[in-house]
Length: 174
Image 1 (cartoon, rainbow, N blue to C red):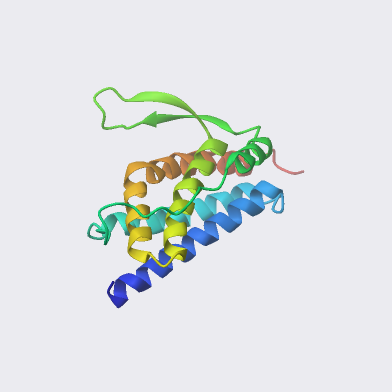
Image 2 (spheres, helix red, strand yellow):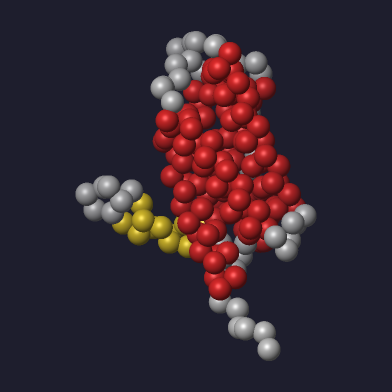
């Protein structure tokens, strides 16, 4: 791996770790008052890292087959804690693939979306931490284009809407 690509991998890994730390803190209730704003910020920053992954040339792993990283961590606890915390705004609707011949509106849940994104990121992080940086980059790039990019984008729109309603739908004081 070139020095430039290695530096890029470290930057992406740092952003992913920041997202996962913040998501865990929100799910534990550590950031109760600012949870929505923190999620909006972290998902936005994560999507910047994803856009960078989508903008570079395709990463090709060293091996033809993905090395086993062991069991992926169970994300059900995270999903349940997020669902409880986000209950008033957890359910939302989104347009699924606006370029499809018949775009459809689908029901979604922020808790499911954020947890699914985290699961994709953790899988790549396991490769990265195991010393397989090219494999980690490949996984993050592939899963960004195939899943977590669109899922995080949908969640971002829902989070933005929730924050906007929280801030703009307030009765004036006085």
